[in-house]
Amino acid sequence: MPSLVEALSRDVGAAFAALELPAELGRVVESDRPDFAPYQCNGAMAAAKQAKRNPREIAQSIAEKLAADHLSMKVEVAGPGFLNLTPDDAAYSTQANVLASDERTGADSAAHPLKLMIDFGGPNVAKPMHVGHLRSSVIGDCLQRLMRFRGHDVVSDIHLGDWGLQMGHLITELEDEQPDLPYFDGEVTGGYPSEPPVTIDDLSRLYPQASAKAKEDPARNERSRKATAELQAGRPGYRALLAHFIAVSIAALKEDFNALGVHFDLWKGESDVNDLIPEVVADFKAKGVAEESDGALIVRVARDSDKKELAPLILVSSAGAALYATTDLATILERRREQDPQLILYVVDLGQSDHFEQVFRAAYKAGLAQEGGLEHVKFGTVNGTDGKRLRTRAGGTFKLADLIEQARDRARDRLNEAGLGAELSKDEFESVAVSVANAAIKFSDLSNVRTTNYIFDLDRFVSFEGKTGPYLQYQSVRIKSILRKATDQGLEPGEIVVGKAEEAALVRRLDGFNAAVIRAERDRAPNVLCEHAYNLAQAFSGFYANCPILPEKDEAIRASRLKLAATTLRQLELVLGLIGMDVPERM
Ligand code: ARG
Image (tube, rainbow, N blue to C red):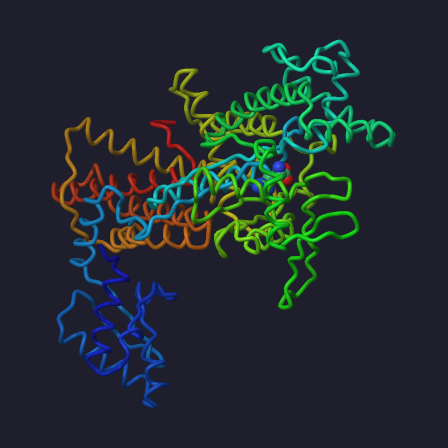
């Protein structure tokens, strides 16, 4: 169904056409001077230029034509030839009832649904996750929700980092601690224990321990490198260990991600495509895409049009190892065979831009993917309040679990300070605190323009005031409470009849949902959804302050406002759901 902007554009476009001017010039937009009129059309200026006529005269003729057509709007000519447009109450009412009767409150599905994969999260086995992984997870999860809402067929994959030197570090460090384990005995080639020899805490200890030693001691590093090479070549004991490491890590990661409400369809990793690497290498050679250079096998990906130099992709290092880019290429092959996606989105920080540019170009060159079928959805870094890259107090990277715990602590404090949740049971209060903490983390991340850096400031994020996740939850809970009271009093929502400016303003916001969703999809821009949610909540506040609902004596007006409130709640829950936030029943 067309939105008000679309319907107005159609009508004004028709008026342009009737005057033998291009109909596209009748495009209507939300006005940047809403104090004059909520919508405007600036096409008369362009038309005047084309026809070498006076813009104000053209605008005047359009206004007259529109008046003669008896449309449900007021038209005024302003300045050099702006058309200011104000729908009348009947137009708002009609639109509001259409939105209210639609399950998706006006949001369309994509006309051409795609088969699409989203690669996000990307934590590394044994290494603690840092905020870069958090951003990837939060943005990627929002995009998968949005894409599904639009009707695309989405498969998400966490793409674990489980195939680098860190695995060699883990293996050798474990060997030093428990040399008698059967995994290290070269003679034993099977029948390994099914119980893992390590816990997640062991893994988090072993890796930094080994990597610190390796930094000091080149021989120690060489041992890890050798173990990594043997692992990659298929040494059975090491493969069995790897499987344990991965299983133990995945179990811990699943807990963290579940706590955050972030979900992946596939829990695959770099190691899953090891067997495809020889095939990729052979194929690249056969196609003449890869060439020898100083003992390594490389793919030249630079283009004449490049503004800065892009190094060749290293397919096989001079030491014979497959690298990060090689596993990414092999993963594209695997995905093509198993899912055959039309598009793969990689939600990974800006710092990996060159890596993805190299991988994509190499994949296109070798015909592994269709040009344009791979897209890097990049994002900026997260800084501390000191403006530097976020670190823990001890100077290390943040652990996701710690961050979530901190946010929950703040959420409990804030709820208490705000006097919220006082009448909830202990369990209910805790579940509200969890959901407030998640909302704070997600909204504060997603409301930033994706590619900019942002400052991580939990105190601000967990506030119930300002542009925050908790504020939006609070507003939604407030509407829920109004609706509950209405039900208790036996009051029913009825047809929407717009009569006040604040009602019209609320309808305009509700009506903008479809455009926001489409723009968010087009630009892979969660911040557009956040903006919409916030503006909607603000419009509701304005409405609620000026248009009494339950105390309203006129039954029809009360029923209309109840319906407006219920529709607002439905849309808020939809958009917050896309952001990955839930709305508690009460707080
Ligand atoms: N594990 C990588 C890292 O921590 C991120 C993986 C991103 N995805 C990919 N297909 N390369 O940097």
